[in-house]
Each structure stands twice: as structure tokens, then as C-alpha cells.
Length: 451
Ligand code: AMP
Figure (tube, rainbow, N blue to C red):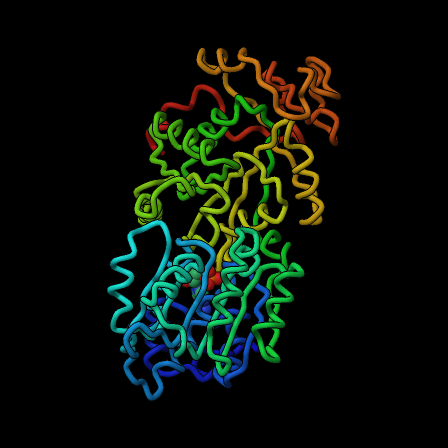
């Protein structure tokens, strides 16, 4: 097991060269098991999330298969079809395959929604070896007879559970029905809800089943921190935390698109280069934001769950849950953005009084309690004070009376003093476990310029 190399798995020389240029010295566990199975022609069910190296796990054997005895593709046809739920993921898969296949002479293209179809139609006119697509637009182009699926000999569905969440499963099924029966198929999914199990029965033939990094394992490698903070002080807390220069590549998650914009605008106003990425932005704007982040021009990417799904950016130092997700699985996906490919990372979650039940659900699925960090927030600015005075009604706070909270009595022990009542006394929670907050009022200016 310890001495497994890509070479020993049977990977061909031109691909080995590309992998070594990428510094992939050792196959990841999913690659170790998937590559030989796929090279032998088997179907595959991969229960794995992003970060496990699954793209190369299916990409390497695919490239190798297509390069052996290569004949050029026919007009409008694709020999391999990869379906991805989001545009970003589709682009990312294509980029990865181009990288691994750069010493091979294969044609790849992407088809995705949200942009003009003309270039995609043109790219398909002479046919391709590998087509990566989101289901909706592909179905459109097939119906327009701009793409033919009758020559597909390898079919891959990536992030199938997310396809289901996003309502694409019917489109996927329609596409499956159009494919030749004689083919090799693979399906990857982080979780296996019933509908996906059914889909695997319909599209895979006695697949090799490989399950890696079940939920929770990623979480084990991530240092998780929790801040109880009133809603109105979240932005302030974020700015304070960002004074730490160690937070050099940060994804901030919000629940809504509007929220993502507001946080990004706030950060930009305070001199932190931040980009927002969410479904209301055009594909080009999303790609631009992602590129800014990838190249380090933007230190912070503010994202919604769907937009961030599948984003593969290395060396993310911190994930900040500005708002906790209402689906606990999303928490695991979010924090998996850091600690990729076996690395370590830090995830920071903000929790206000209306999010306590989300926190409980999260702690249940990760099977651990996230330790709250004691902190003190600096004085509110005038603007924040004004905002606080405006009436607001997060659920669970309907009568303006935080339960379990006694004014001034911030005992941060157990669950008792965790409520969002701190809003009224930002300096109250001083310590827990004797630890000091890692920032203090007064030393801000110097560090701000450093950041
Ligand atoms: P994925 O799960 O396909 O999204 O891949 C997660 C990350 O791991 C990507 O940034 C890949 O470039 C990286 N990666 C994949 N396989 C390897 C490997 N064998 N060695 C080092 N990095 C890898």
C-alpha cells in the first residue's frame, strides 16, 4: 500500500509526465483503487467528496483509454461525456483533464448554461474526445441536433447528489436514455440518497464500489472554531478576524446571494479585496471572481453554497461560515474547502441566536461539539449602533427577548450563556478556558495595513 505509485497502477508515460509536473507524487486512496478498476474497463460507483482527488481518479483512466488507438472524433460527436451540476465544476473538470492530458492529443470542450451557445456549438461542430457539460444546456443542444450522443463510450456523472439537490436528476435520466448501451459508466456522489441509489442501478453495470473519506473525516482534519456573535456584529467580527495575516486565502459562506454581496461590499469598504460569487452573477462574472481569488488578487471569496460547490482552489487557509447552513451536510462540504488533498485547515463559524438549532444539527452529524472561542468585540461604530436600533426579527427572537439570557450574566459555560444577547454588551464575554482573544483594540491600525 505504501509504495503505490501512478506507474505501478498502470498509468501511461505521457500522463505520468503531466502528473509529475503537477507534483502529484503519490496517488490518493480513491485513485489507488479507481485507476486499476477503470483501466480494466469496469464501471465505478465512487462515494467521495471533492478534495479526495476524484477528478484524477476518473480522469486519468479516461484519458488513457481515449489515447490508445486514438481516431479523431466525428462531427458533433463526443466519445466521453462528463456531467457536472455546476458551471464552475464543469470548467474545473475540463481544466484538470487538460492538465493531466497535456501530452496527449485529445480534444476537450465544455458546454454550460448561462452563456451564449454559439461558441459551444462551434466547438462541437468537428466533434470532441471529451465533453464536460451541465445537464440543462447539453439537453438543449442535443435537442437542437448540435450535439450527438450516439458515440459516447464513457459516461461519468459527478456530484450526483448535488444534481439531485439542484433538480437536474430528470435531465440526467433523459441524457442517460440517449446513450449507447455499450459503454463504461461512473458515478460519483458524496452521499447516497435513495434517488441516487436508483440512478446507479439504472446506469451502472456491476460497478466497483469505492467509498472514501466518509462525511466527518474531512472534518477531523479541520480545526473548527465557533464564535457566538449577534447578527449585527458579524461583519465587525469578520473584519477583526481578518486582521490576522494568517488568514490569507479565505472563503466566507453566506446563506443568501444578497448576503454574499453585502459582506463582499463591507470588506471592500474596509480595504480587504473581496469578490462575491453566487447564482445571480453572469457566468463570466463568476469566473472572473474565481480567477481573482485563485490568483491571490482577492484575499476573500464570499460565496453561497451552490456557487461554491466543487470550487477547487488550493491552499485555502480559512473557511468562515458567516451564516451557518440550514443543511448540516453543507457544513461538511464548506469546511472541506480548506484541508484539501490531505492538508489541514481552519474553519470558523459565526452563530447568532437564530442559528442555534442549525448548530445542533451540525454537531450531530460531525459527532462532536465545536468549542466556542471567547472573544470581545470592539466598540460598535455609529453606523452599527444605528443598525442595532433598527428592529429586526430573526426567528427564535420573535418577542425581542433572548431566552436564557440575563443581562450582564455572560457565563459562557455549556449552553447557558450562548445566546445572542451579547449584542447589548459587546465587552462582556472575556474568557473561556483562560484563553485571551487573539486581537485587542488598539493594535489594529498597524496590522490592518499589513493585511
Ligand atoms: P478533487 O477531489 O478531484 O477535487 O481534487 C482535490 C485536489 O487534490 C485538487 O486540487 C487536485 O489538484 C489535488 N490532487 C488530486 N490528486 C492528487 C495527488 N495524487 N497528489 C496531489 N494532489 C492531488
